[in-house]
Image (cartoon, rainbow, N blue to C red; front, side, top):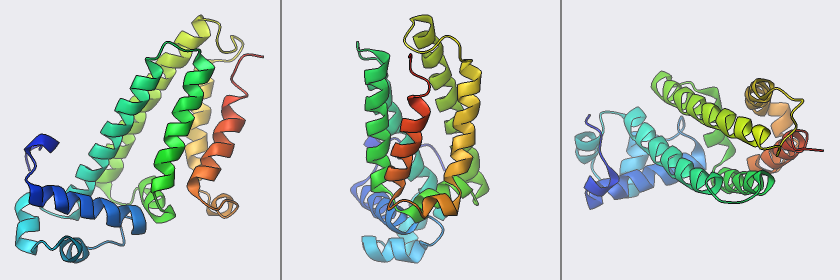
Amino acid sequence: MKEIKSKELSPKMVHLVETAKELFFRYGIKRVSIEEICQQSGVSKMTFYRYFPNKTAIAKHVLESIYGEGRERINSILAMEAPFEERLKKVLVTKMEYADKYSREFIKDLMMGTEPELKKYIEEENKKSLNEIRRIFLEAQKNGEIRSDIKVDFVIYMMNVMKEVFKDENLQKLYPDFASLMKDAFNFFYYGVLKK
């Protein structure tokens, strides 16, 4: 399937993608079927297959839009002329807003990465994100906005460890939603990084 820009989407395809997004956010990717997407959107299976060869393709399209939108919002925050701590807080708020939109099932599907093509895409996006975070932390450290006695690569490593901790179902049960877990984790993590 060729890459499709959102400007090129037909109204029917936009509706199909929005319906898939709503269902994925509510029930997770794994549980939603092509039949449910077609039924909810009022689109035939034939029309679905005209746009997407399978459920993975529409799920990847949804993920690309999520990551693209999120990257734009976060980059605009990071480009602001404001202290590092303020920008960091705004990034956290943005990430929590995104986490609030998603069900535990959707987040679990993303974290567990059972679909190889989606897992690969998510890993690539996470790698890009961590490289950007590393660059920003090095810049903040150079400007004296975060502690100079902490290695930035250690911070990045610990961020990866936290992603694994988020997968722990026992930890997830302690929180009403994923956004609350993220808030506690990021507060714990980032306030240990900020300058004393």
